[in-house]
Length: 220
Image 1 (tube, rainbow, N blue to C red):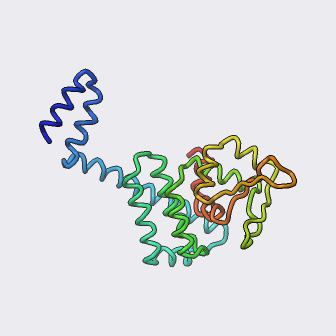
Image 2 (image 1 turned 135 degrees about the vertical axis):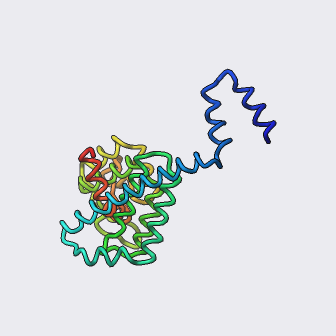
């Protein structure tokens, strides 16, 4: 393996900055490398603490009791869900997405959502980026929500502005639809402009991430 590494480094000799990538992983098991990862994770724990404070303040402001929030935070199943966010943060290379996971973990203390639904939200958020959540919140704001869920599908309550909002961020819209947060359809009568509706899962994701969205919109 050492000989192969030397050979590759010779081939890259004229691209000296690229050699840094090779050296980074050749030293992967060093104390220095592991310490850098640990420092990032400690920073995430601080972000989680800030997020818990902000989420708790928000929940209390809209009528939730602190006792109920604290009782939820002690449930073993909830702590395992938060463990999943922590593991995702450990792997995540992008700082804003790590912050997103901190607020998602904190938002999971929402007392009125069942733990199976919180777990479903966690699996969904793992597929999303901050920009996807921005679009989801914008669609909720303009009233593009599923009003009734029937066995045969959703009854759409689509606003006139929803498709315009969707078109402005179509890439994020496709991700949201693939994740089950949004549905689009071309109505038989008024087509061909698609109707856009946030699903119940999308509403739950938006509810868990409400404080994060507020922080992003405030530019913090």
